[in-house]
Length: 197
Image (cartoon, rainbow, N blue to C red):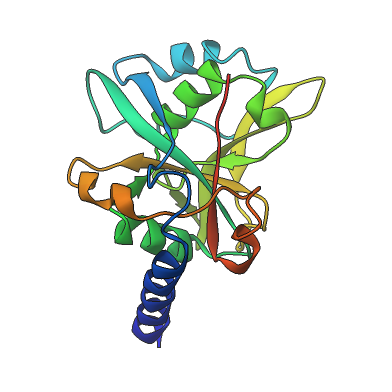
């Protein structure tokens, strides 16, 4: 059943690409984000100036990458209440991976006001607790910003998912998916979120 579901999603994506490929110059807009994977978790959190940190630890979300790298990240939103596998399978079909905690923290440090309006989640870091999957996320309000653990079963419509471009995905640049503000976006399963300073 799941295979049929993803086959239908793939066909639907291809048909939408055929219909809408004349969009914004065929370029996926994301941001080149410097990530220092060698920072301690404490220092990576401190760089974001968060007012609250809850449930985030190296034991729960171990760092598996090393060095200083520039990662190409993109932000996505689903037009439905999604399961984690829905999003991760969509990413994989495009040559992307879910961002991990270190990339999420680097994004939060570089774009500190963005999370005041959206919940921004990193599906590439996961911790299981009694059968529940937990992922780190950024959130906030006009008064404060935080990094916490999201443990709900469904990812609500409106949540932002962070992806990292894989090294072999450059050939997918021609696949156009509109920004969520585009009138075409409401008929699509996923749309892109622009990120500006």
